[in-house]
Amino acid sequence: MTDKLTFELTEIEDGVIRIVITLLNEIELGVLYYERAKKSFNRKPVGMNTWTCVDAKVQGLYEHGGENLTPTDIMNKCQELIHQRMHPTAIGQ
Image (cartoon, rainbow, N blue to C red; front, top):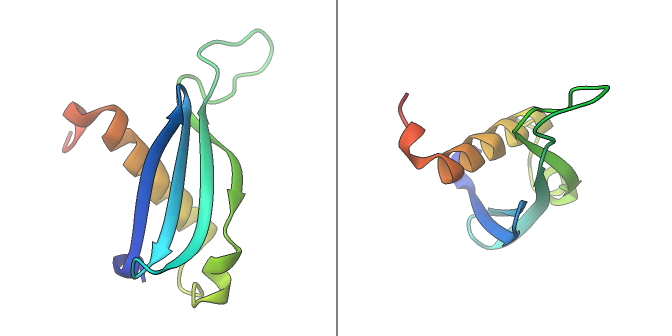
């Protein structure tokens, strides 16, 4: 199913990324918003210089045949795309 999905990354402001997921470039399945996690911590570590999903609306994924695709699959793909976008020289390492 992932070969039929399109992930469109947009940095909507500094430190905020929106990822729109569409099926066959026609049907919007979901939108995820990511923000930069803390770079340091005083009490609890939270992601240490990574991107954290702060909001997600993926109801379309389940309405249009996402039974073979888990939320973990979506999150992993989004993290991979963000890493490629923010660290283009790290591809293939």
